[in-house]
Length: 218
Length: 266
Image (cartoon, rainbow over all chains, first blue to last red; front, side):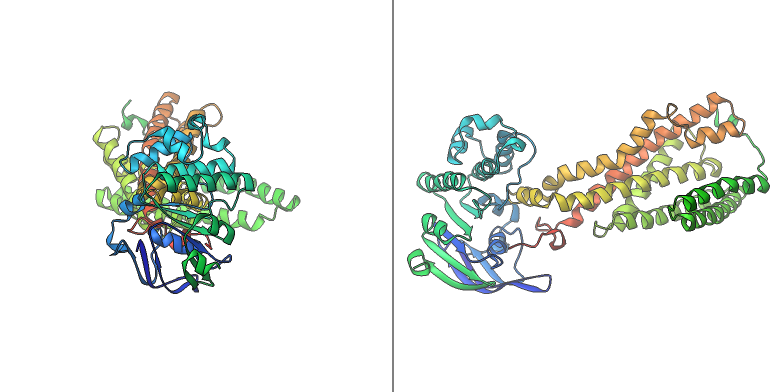
């Protein structure tokens, strides 16, 4: 298993956001689905230690998550947040920043291509990109670190269907091209069907289903 | 110019102070006339300034007469303490801001005063250390309060970008760097701007005081320049130390943004 959750719980502001979650996330492509407020994004943030659970334990490749050095873990298990939040500058400067943090050499054109961006985007000021283009630049920035796992939080929620299709095509291409696992948060079961083989369904912070796509989203 | 040559002295009688209250009455009248509802605040400000400055005047008189460095240091320590308490009230969004502010003010005051004495600009006597120390610590307090106030606002606004940068494996320091830079700038910029326009748009207080006290304009200008340059150093140190120490309080040891900076997440 890529990730194993054992009785994971988390409270925020006196409210239980995640409640005794026990589930496995295998290598490959997994979707975390459920209605708004189900705790999907919170769970994703726990997987690269942007937050820690209040109860229970998470293991990554058989080892407790908190036994990993958090910064190294985040370079290996890279999270792309729901809304683009790039650093000031060009697309290239953002990609270079990420690559340097991970100690990786940047193959600029290939990374842009994997994120569904053509080479002309390298010099573009991120402030002048559309939200969809920024989201692809965020994906490119994560890929510049050559992560083993990509955590995607609603990567297309702010986009129209054309931009959504472009991102989904880029993700499908990624899986063909790279040996990378993807954990994707989505409120849209159809997107989960298009992009994943394994599904975790959350409702009100509790596990409502976990297993192969065909079983959970029958 | 030797500082001893600046020794000038004039006598101000209490009736002169009382007469200046006419302008306070004018301020209160304006407030009342235009419904600004500031009469009470004007009254409080007038009484407080009179009581506070009179008390400080007597305290300084005692310290001058005692002529011992220990009393000066004690007074400066009290200024640092009250400065940190005051600045904390303006940096409410920064958790645990008191300690960074206290260290920032102590370092800014200690290092700039130490440097001006070491460079031979001022003699290490109460006559110089008390007023200069007061100015240094006062300006350092304002700068660090402004810087931390900005830091608190910016950390909230930049939460998404900071967390996205942490998600790449950046350290808390790297992720907060643009925010800390902006906070530092805002703490320093006011004094830099006023230093740029000094003499053109306004006459700074020390120079005005010296001219009123009968000093030569050249001496007044030189002393003012020294103080402006000393203040530039002290506000930079205080804003730097306060922001450098305070930003860490927004993060856990595992380089996570603390819960209170988080938005409500899905």
